[in-house]
Each structure stands twice: as structure tokens, then as C-alpha cells.
Length: 141
Length: 141
DNA sequence: CGATAAAAAGATTTTTTTGTCCTTTATTAA
DNA sequence: TTAATAAAGGACAAAAAAATCTTTTTATCG
Ligand code: FES
Ligand code: FES
Image (cartoon, rainbow over all chains, first blue to last red; front, side):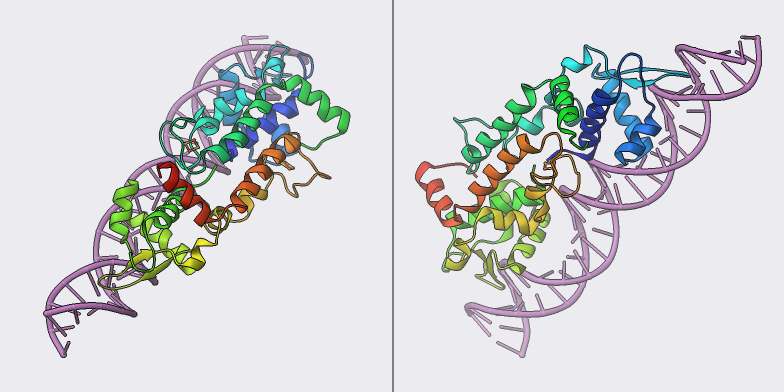
């Protein structure tokens, strides 16, 4: 489904959403330990997310990564598009070109419903809402 | 979603379902050309499918690949499991262990519905039914 | 039998993904 | 203003996936 890059990215963003704000930042090393993912690799992923404006960071002592209010308005689809590209949720499951109802492959109508259902969900729930749900229901990240 | 191996495999099986039977076999070279996929790689994929009993083949002149009546009773999920492993449709979308309703990740309920919807579809439609639909509606493979 | 056709098998290469390491730059605080 | 800290950036390494090439086996037919 998602690449590891993307999985790590989503988890990191949600972790930041739950555990940080403008006044409480966290460094890569701690994030990587808490999520049990490779440090250096996660560093790269966070770099990309930062460049895309999906997360925030400050260098130097006391610095680290965090989510601003703006960042929290984004949704999971934004992260997926940033890390795995837009194709992942839009391309034909069989790899054929021009996926559409007019030009379907044998699995199109079966896959389409699912794919777009998921895409809708990922798009219409902000990071912030998700974070609240995670806190409320003590969901693992 | 699916690996290329799996995409090629599904397409090849459907191609065989539509274009072959016990008396009309087709060789890898032709299949690869028709589907526009790499020959040698497809050869490997077909080998695996054959070993798993999902397709049939005969060596030598006049030989080639085809689908037997038995083969046609299988479904797409069988192919996916054979080529991408059972994990693909059952594992957590975020890569966390033990995906279940009792032990959900933040995307579990959103992803679960989609994943299992798709899995259901792939499981409850035989290759044969799909092939008939492809012929009837002239769907591309 | 011997030539030929086609899949099966094995080995190898290329590309992509994932993961590590080291240096540079920005920030803070003593 | 210097030492320490943390992200950013670049180069490199390992592993996995995708693709290719070569040889072997099996079957058919003249
Ligand atoms: S054409 Fe294949 S999923 Fe739409
Ligand atoms: S736990 Fe993540 S999808 Fe079920």
C-alpha cells in the first residue's frame, strides 16, 4: 500500500500532532526511538515534510520538530502525496494508463470504490482531528 | 498497492482466461507482447503461478500456457496471495504489528473497511466470471 | 533418432528503496 | 564569542525488486 517512507512519515506527523506544539519540540532521535524506526532514514523523511511545509522545525539547542497550527490543518492525503506521489491513490491498480470509469480495467470498479473511499477518508479528516481522536481513545502510533 | 510482479501476474491470468483453453495455448513471448510487459520477467512470474497450480502449461512445440477448468475456479485473491503474500491485504497500513479492531492504529477503521471491501470483491468473483465480463464488455487487460 | 519448439531453471545485472554516516549550517546559552 | 545542540544536506552502502541473459529440460514432429 504505502511505502515505508510514507508509513514512517504518517506516523511521525501523528506523533508530533499528539506530543508537540510551538512550545514543546522533539528531536529526530527521540521520535525515532518512540516509533521504533531507523533514525537517519526518519531524518530524511522529516526533511522532506518540512520542505513541503507539512511540519515545522527549529535548529539548535532547544530546537526540534513540531506541528504548528497551520500544519495541523493538513490531512493524511497531503502527507501521502508528498511522500509517495499523487499516483498512489489515483493510478490503476493493474498499472494501466488513464484509469477512469470510461476506460476501466477488469478490477476498476471493484478497486475504485475502495480506493476512493479511502482517499475520501484521508482527505476529510484533519491531522488535528485525528490527533484528538488518538489522545481520546489512546490509540497506538 | 500491488507489486509489478503481481500486476503482471493478474493481467496474464486474465489474458489467459480470455484467450486460451486446453486446446489453445499461448507462449510467453506472445503474452508479453500483447500485455506490453518484459518477457523474461513475465516468464518468471508465470513459472511461480504454474508451480502454485494457478495456471497450466505444456512444454515443447505446440505448447504454451493456458487455463484449465480447475484454474478458472480460482480468484484474484489467490493470485495476489501467491505473488505478493497474504500480508498485503491483511497487514496494518502503517506497518504496525497485529492489525485488528482490538488493537487499531489511527487509520485502522478507515483503512480496514476499504481493504476488506476490496478483499471481499477479489475473493468472491472467480477468474471465469471475470473473464466472461471482460469478453462481454470488451474490457482492456 | 534428430531437429526444433517451448517452458523451467539458474545466474547475473540494473534499478529502486531503504538505511547509514559524515559534514555543514543555524540557534541557543554560558 | 565560544561551546554545545539540533536540523539540513550530501555521499555512500545494503537490501529488495525488477529485468535480462543463458542453459537445461521436456515434448513434438518429421
Ligand atoms: S483502470 Fe484499473 S483501476 Fe481504474
Ligand atoms: S492496525 Fe493499522 S490498519 Fe489495522
